[in-house]
Amino acid sequence: MTTVNSMQHQHTIPWFFRKLHALIRIIDELGFTQCFVFLVRRLKTPSGSTYSIKPRHANHQLLLRAGTSDPSVFRQIFFEREYEPLMGLNDVKLIVDCGANVGYSSAFLLTQFPSSHVIAVEPDPDNFNILSKNLEPYNNRAVAVRAGVWSNSHPLKVVRSAYRDGREWSVQVRPTKAGEEPDLVAVSVPSLLESSGFDRISLLKVDIEGAEVVVFGSDVEWLDLVDAIAIELHDDSHFGNGSNAFLSAIRGRGFNTTVSGELTICRRSS
Image (cartoon, rainbow, N blue to C red; front, side, top):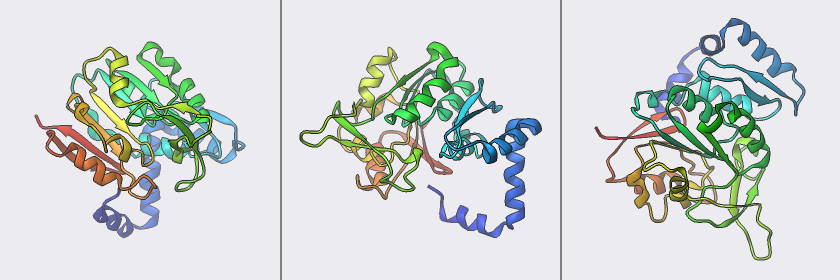
């Protein structure tokens, strides 16, 4: 969710300086040697193969798949640092990562909040495979759940190549039709909280490709048990307008809202 003013500002900066600024951010995150390795591997690694990089803001090496959307997600989280506005959160215990993709957001947040635990939910089996490997070094601080986030425990199908660019970061889910075999069963935010053993969700991260319309469009009393939210809103999916559904759900519940890149950040008033 890039604002009009920020987009206009980007267009006023010469191309060379935008590229230089991007390179400086990469070097700051990876260091000179790993920056060179990252750029070479991104260009030279055969599509379908994996390579690993250790960013400064993650405690462990992270796998990336060449020829996928992984480097773009990596860039958003570690170079553009979209989650930086959350760094002022205190006493972060439970993080629920809905739409965890391959685990970069989970790894970043686990590193920044060393006393936290993460439940990372991802429906796509290929993404989930890399997610599990990326979170394995965090041991019992991280649990990976292969499921789609929904308003209830509905059987779901995984849908690829139907939304936006159709790449790995655009995977959706939908309810099964009559006679279809489900790919997985949905989980709800309240059920994830109940299974966690915690009383509250310190941070709810949501990037579920439009299904936020379903999650926030029904009973949302559970929002009173959430301290902060980082959500990517989608207004162009078949689910409907994600912004309207989400903003209506949080209205009057004590959240202050800001924007960071594509994320809408909601924090409770102090």
